[in-house]
Image 1 (cartoon, rainbow, N blue to C red):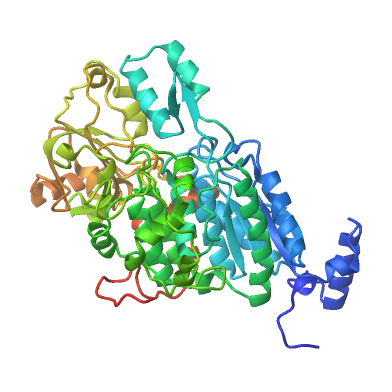
Image 2 (image 1 turned 30 degrees about the horizontal axis):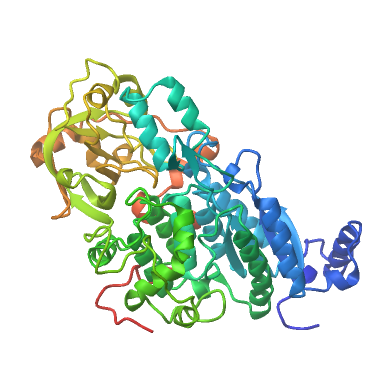
Length: 581
């Protein structure tokens, strides 16, 4: 018998007490599906099938699987598909984030259980890609990411529209009574031009881009739209490469190094990407043993201008970014700020891949560093007595005048309280106030929903108010815009200071100073803390597991028992660390 790790159908045998019988039985069953011994002796490439009738972002998965299978077979492998949980942002109650860790567990345990030599992870909608990367890192088997690709844009009365920045813009106009029911119904059928993920710099597009930047997905794979020939060719190439990483035993931990995460954070900032991606990258890095250093991330942000003219920070859509050269073109612009020696899933370094990248050509989507969309960093990390462990604001999508603001707090106890009062004409609020929504963090509203995008109170919207400072311990969609402070940590439900704010208190926000301060003295805050009631928690099931084990945003909202056992250096690496490459 060989001392080498078993591969193919000999790996991960079912425990019957007799390995040879287990293999005999396994082959007997699969031969019933018509497989020959020649096929079964080849490297087994698993393909994660995340198709679901409830997930239109993954509506092209059957076609992707066909292309992947073609690539695998062209390279001498045996492709076998298997299902996992598939989560869509708009078809998951209470929120898709509640199910991300469950999908990660599903992915990890299926990879551990099945006899696969490598796996192609087909993800797309917001939480699927981070869930798959988290699971693959923990499972430790060779894996390569393939995203489904963005949807096509639509057209409304001569104007290009796309989900979901325009969804929010039109809904805001409808709430303000600027458009009527007939038009909002009409535009509802125009915003999404095809299957695929959101066509702007939301979480799905951001995770696609950072996956390519980290090197866990093929160069050029992030931006081809879902229903294009380019997307199918990327899928075929991914299938081919999956056989290669199976042979080379190239596992995620060899690719997802501190240098790779540095490149991911850099691209997140340069594209004005989703704030949610920071949470997801923290979770993936945590599976590798690398804690997130918010201060280092903020320093990186200060030196990384927004270069991609993509909604919500700019004007274009993902299909425009693809035509402009995609992530590779952005990486070329950032080249001297990247860790070029980082290994990629191709087996070559990022620097080597960029040497062979298509030559730049004139376009107006990806700017030069001398002519950025926003020069101050897309995401700022805030500290203060309202967020001792940190909070963030996407300043590239905010109203500049509101980033330095001092105003009266108008407090909503939770999402239900906000829903009940936000549109009442007797709500005591004006445009200079600061809306505070608490108890929507990882524990307070299990799953940390995207309710941080607090609607403009209807009375203000009718008066023409387009933005107002908003603060919460929740998240918002990467497709959203506004002066919105998110992820205030620790959250209110576990004793964070957001629980102590009362309507009428004064809050001071300074993005330039990176501060978020409640102007109430410490003694008064201590008195208030003694009076905060304990909120009920789930008594059983997955919800109980979730609130008992979930971490805060800065740790990725992962479950503690799923994080790496050993902690290594933090990411992004400190700026004084010498650049490599």
